[in-house]
Image 1 (cartoon, each protein chain N blue to C red):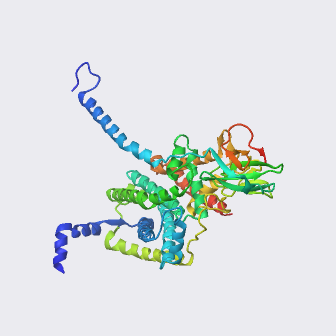
Image 2: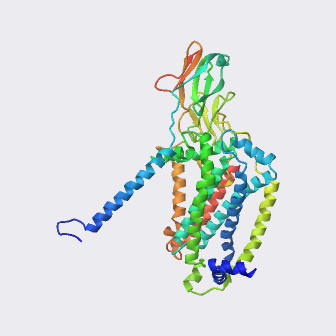
Image 3: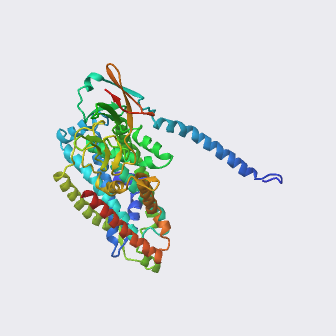
Length: 155
Length: 352
């Protein structure tokens, strides 16, 4: 039934109302399911390493450390400074390794290459390795999420 | 013994079902052989179910225990290595048959009206099978399977907006961790089987509803082909093929059991020479050869779009090929061979 002033019939109005009601009911059930399947996550802002364990590194060598769930790489440069990277390939997330004799980081998954500063130089990686900031205090190495500025500090 | 049968017959009606199967006929022509691929897939699906149930009795889906429990299945559980080997090889056989089944339908154009939905549900079943394979690959939790999963779950990230969420959904977090393993186990033994069953029921229902397709020319001429009764003739012939396939499967499974690597270490670099399962090799090679940057896009984004485009074309094939006997239809048939050639070249290239 449709009265003259109306834009649509009464049936259409009621169907839309009922449909809308069903859709909101569905949303009430879907929302908690979606919330449930995405776990909370935060990457660490800072990781502290005991200085004593890392002070014996010789130049052009690396040590791994856990950066949250990802591997981090601490690298001693030739001038004695330390650099830190998230050792995860920027192509498709594989863990990279450092090849000291070639002075390059290498990802075995799809043949990706980075130079010793973490710059992508060969293969599919689209971006440089993520670098982290390194600060040395009396007894520890502080590794911080990189903002602006240098990622190298003198030991 | 007659009494129980009659009691059951009165309530269930086996005779009606048997007479339906006797009267159902399979068309006979020079392409009949391809019909057998469908039921052979079913054989391997059942083998996967049975061996899967057995493996769950010993498998432990956690970070600490997964690799050790598979090692135990291989070394200590009586015949455990055979069961795991059959499960692993049967998966490959099943996926190979799904691909052959779909390609035969592409080339014979059995997907034309009114069988478009049958094709689409079949393509969905292929995707489900591939996802079965992908999730199952992680479960032994060794160094190779970890790297393959890191790559595989990172691929959707290139899709704008939803990509990041898809990756987190698959991994159960930003990174591949023990949570990913447990989640993949859930997909593999619980969620995917339910989907596979529903899709399979839908697929078989549609085949029953529309009847088995006959080659296009015959169907157009409305000539009735000589039929082979489904029961017992077709089933008996089928059984011969099933027994043969089981023989091949067991022989390969016993002589070439799957490898089990060292327990996965989340912090270790990716091992050299990582390779996914053979059915993902062409995608693996594709991701490898796309350069880091093409114009303004990153290579992997373009590669992902390319793969998604191919998948969409494949899925909508019956809607694209809606004039099968004309010029366009011929082009679609040629494209089937081109696609096969492309996949073959990429696969061989990845092995070099």
